Length: 233
Figure 1: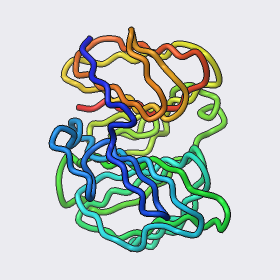
Figure 2: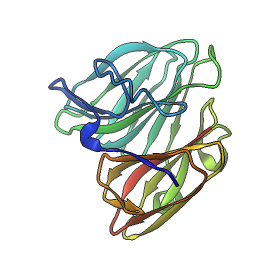
Figure 3: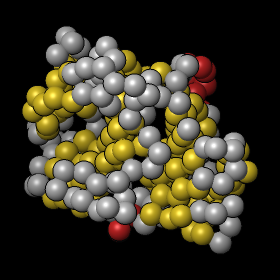
Figure 4: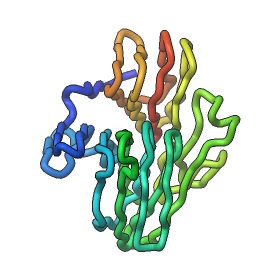
């Protein structure tokens, strides 16, 4: 299987004082023609937001956006009337569709907010905007690999308007994680914490691996890992 590796240190970087961000793909002032996205996957930002700071109201359209909280609390408000706070392991999903405005803040005065935000292009423009949340059950908390995003909402996942499956990977120790990639699809594996190996390729926190070759991909890890695994049409 042919694989490509995107090293953490090669990602775009921005330090705004209140926000420190890593960009896997071109975003805002970071532009790299070689890294504009992967299939329908357009943005993976890893952000650290200072206490009592955040993103003021701003607009989006024609994008499926989800935020995975790693540390701290995120407070969300939008023009659809939604207001929520989410904690580590929880996800907020917003279909921007024909247009929506939202804000994202760190409500804590002492703790930082650490998150992964993902943008996926929808399968068609002009959809009706909507908002949803995903919170794991006890069984899902204990599972190594859990489907969190899909087109059809199966297995209690949150649904988006794109043929994209996203799994949250979170293991408690050493082991082997396998994923079967079907013909015509693409895999993106974003490692958040821990270390993993695929063949002779070693991945460290922040590294990513992609492939468009059908077959089994096996991740060997000598300790706990946390990651997001994308399987995209």
